[in-house]
Length: 241
Image (cartoon, rainbow, N blue to C red; front, side):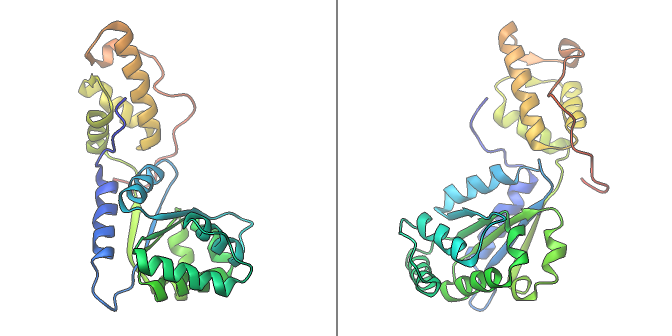
């Protein structure tokens, strides 16, 4: 399998949103929310964007407090956490302003239950001016409506949807070192229910099978009734593309 990012529709939407965020005019909010169901490829796409932008990435947890959040950001900035939260905010704002590195907060669902964390993150955004990207599960967008302090600063909402057949084709041609015929490609997409993660697992199995047999192309007939991946695929969401 090739270690390359497939430029599927979700990734293209994320890229466009970030470009608009980083090139926004003065006075335009600089936050984005990336959300969607498990398996849509958020983790892969965000990892790519963090590396591409030299972003500061932290992953929230259920046990986080404002001090914990600030300490994690300090560590990612290469600094030792300080004893006072106000001092850490000053340091973080100064460092982000100087470097213009964006801030990514994954599992942002955990922030919504703590108003002080929301206010602290809002202060970092307002004072530094750098893009702040929140990443959450499907449904976080509805919960954010009840947190207007944060919601009104989000200028880009990027929903990661289940992948369509064209996305499956793009993924296969990008990462798989053998080719699939249309029948097998459609089966891969259907049995994976649009999950990028499950399709990647299936492609790895197909590629290994093809290489073991010395084939450059695998057809649905050749694959037969073999399993494409273990376990069940996520249930398809109504209206997904």
